[in-house]
Amino acid sequence: MGHKTLIGATQGKFWGTTRCFFENSSSEVHYIEADKGGYCSRHYHEDKWNRFIVLDGKLKVTIYKEKSEDVTILTDGMFSDVPPGVEHRFEALKNTKALEVYWTNELDPGDIVRKDTGGMK
Image 1 (tube, rainbow, N blue to C red):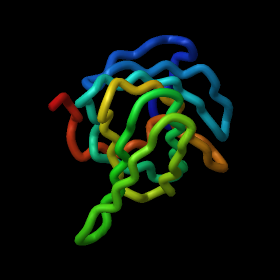
Image 2 (image 1 turned 180 degrees about the vertical axis):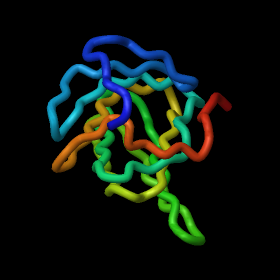
Image 3 (image 1 turned 45 degrees about the horizontal axis):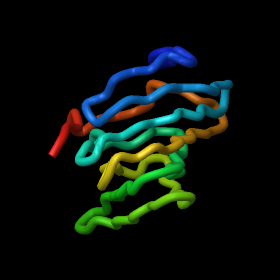
């Protein structure tokens, strides 16, 4: 089992902040604020689905395939799902407020496998 998420605690990231406001044995919901130009690490989750729901702003979600990339641009009210085992990254194309929802049959908050650290452009 990975790290335990602190519900309600704001965590700083290279790209902005995240705060978990719901967690149980099979799902989590995080509120994120991503600064324009900020992007998360290229990563995948071994067992959990990842849904990005944009509340305000513009988020680019990139899914990495063997020899290509699948890019989805999300704006206010839009969402996109990433299945388990699929490498992905998000980037804020402008200051963005969003929900990040994770779910699985048995949630392990530490199941992320990072390819890099993320950062700012």
